Image (cartoon, rainbow, N blue to C red; front, side):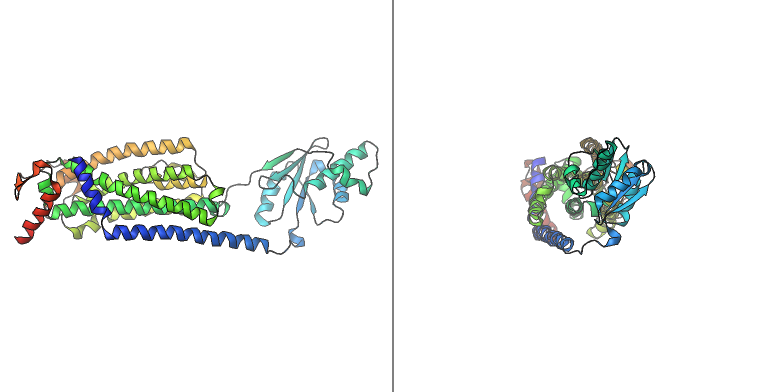
Length: 441
């Protein structure tokens, strides 16, 4: 009987024109996003290539810590007219100076730290080790080394001696800022995943709600409950709709892969793991919200009341969606961001978006999914109880408290409709004939 209910719900949803049209439109939007990403990424690269050379006020800088100031004369001779600024700073102040410089200027900056006998070049992690500033520091260090040995280094020997010494380097990791700017590919992937999530969940839970109320208002549910348990009927409805939604998500994910290829970013990211994760989050998110929606929809008896019953859930759904879209990239390390990643209902959006940016660990994802699974079982038990106690209620909207604690209503016995036994499992035929009888009466 469960299989028959699942098949009926699958056919009912997949055959509707609205479902087919929305699937096609959403797929085209995702592909269009790929073309938009291609345009924006190429535009940024063109803008960067067309920028004017750096002005004197934005020329590269070498920060010289106080204990390294004896190297300054040699550095000045090594620079020899190059547009590079030597700036004295406090001892062990290279990291702070580089971070402050990165906030106000786009030009390169390194720091000279360590000791005179063991100098250390400090630079931010994104600056290549073979940048144009390092050779000048090496030149100055070599010149001082030769001077200490009593040798005189001529100007023409500076370049030859520069590569005879390899000064160790230390990276400065700049503090995380807005991930939208720092990781545009992650933002694009996270936004696409979030849109697929919210669309699929809203489609699924609204279909569940309308199906429940339709069966109540036509009283077909009374016939169905004469041969199948209420919880089985609700489970079959959610599973059938969920399978169709998952099939649609798989198609949209394939479109997302195509969009990433169009945008030219497919080779820059490891997307296969995220695709699997987003499909899992769609399943968990759908069952979480569909269970709540099914319980609320069973409290009303008319199609006009469905919107007011499920609108709180629909509105709430946009809270984690927008938090994932805007709060996560602005506060990736916040305790609120990490905490919401483990809250059922929030987790499908927050954790999936964190994974898109690459700031979540596998352990965090597994724990978050496990918590969501436990929550789904609890919500399913809640929905099953509410549905069992309210699905046969007609008339004024039943309160949630009454649905939870009132005695379960027994279905009417309808052994045969137009010669077809309900016990034979012909649910579809019974539904059709019942509609015909009620329409002629």
